[in-house]
Image (spheres, one colour):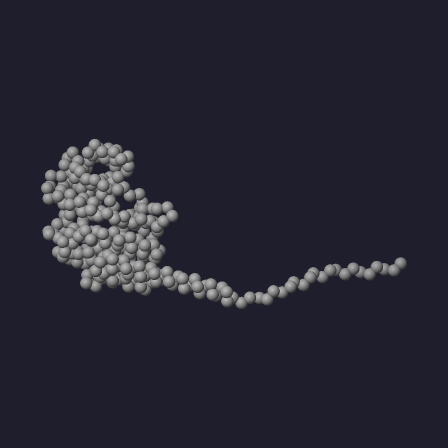
Length: 329
């Protein structure tokens, strides 16, 4: 491990003790840590190999400020930030106890239609707040969506990992990714076609596209553009004709298939223009499903009352055995 990345057991700013590694990517490592001041578990994100690089440290600091400014129950909250003894910046976030949507799909294969819609609605609520802050996430995928269990309630969706976020085209002053450099920015299977082509005018519709891909995967249990290598994945993103949802699952309403197909349109102009617009369409599908369920229940009740009845018939009394007449003697 690089000397710029603290080891387990390290105490950052005399407060956060690194307990275990939760995960790592190409840009950063996330640790679970114990906050000695408030006696609680937190998550600490440390970028890899940027100590001493003023530009990269600046981008990381911008990420911290931007995420900290987004106060939303479906966005993983930033609690603090600072620098290690080696000069590497770090970010302190709430520790989430749950499982990623990726882990859920690995375990359950696919979600119920209602569950997929419920998760989509919360994810879009988070994205609405993110986009309102002038940020495009650019890495929406099941791995970055955590489902926090709440006994007796639907899981709380938390969006995390803003390492690849950037200013939207309307607010951007430069072309920099906020915390990670690279020619291919994003996860290939969830990248919109304009991302694949390296467009310099990306906007919130790349996140809308990714939400559509996530919904398709959650409903079918299959990754829309899975392949063994990046080149084939990107070719699929640009050219593959997907199997319609209604063919993959008979219980998916036609209206939901239309909504997901629109979100996944290769032409950004044909997609939903905002998270709220896609959210409204999902709400309409949800209401349609509820109305159909109520109608089916009413039909079942009517059929139950209309069942033919058999008139009550008294059972004949059992016949008593007759005694043989006594012989005269």
